[in-house]
Image 1 (tube, one colour):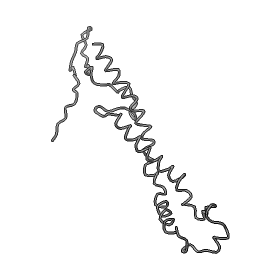
Image 2: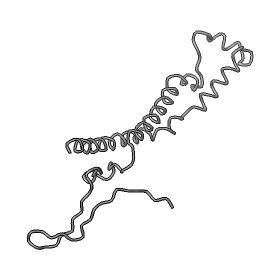
Image 3: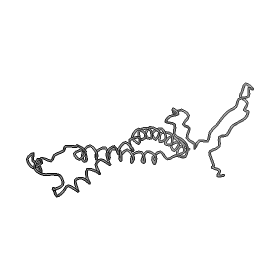
Image 4: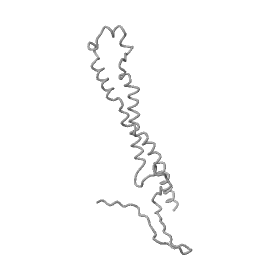
Amino acid sequence: LILVNKPKYNMASESTAADGSNTAAITSPKNVPNFSHVPWPVRPRDGINYDFVATLYLIGSALALSFYLLETKILDPLLVENYVDATTTTADESDSTTGTEENGEEGSNAWKEFASGMQGMYFIFAPFVPCLLWSLLVRYFWLKETKKISLDKKDN
């Protein structure tokens, strides 16, 4: 069993107000961020570095964009069934030759197989994009509160 030291909140069980009524008060230390005003879907948690989280989501989003651009811009001609390169083959040559007699046919088939294997690869990394947006929003609230605490420490 591993025990983790978490910040402790001081709870005054009873305090007496000026009118003599007993009230329970909860106070938190000055150096612990208070995220209670932040909506729960984007509420930062203590002990998590959201710079690191946002960086990892940025890397995943960059991979998704890279695979998408690779598929649509570079490998797209290889994915088209009847793609004919106008600079190397004319209509007369394609009628008179078979695919097995050409010199570069094996290399061309390998690229086509690679292109078909890479098709849709960006879908694996696509969930990183909305997660990146979420982590940037959480990071904003995290930085805002930690900056406030650091300014309070400087003032004291």
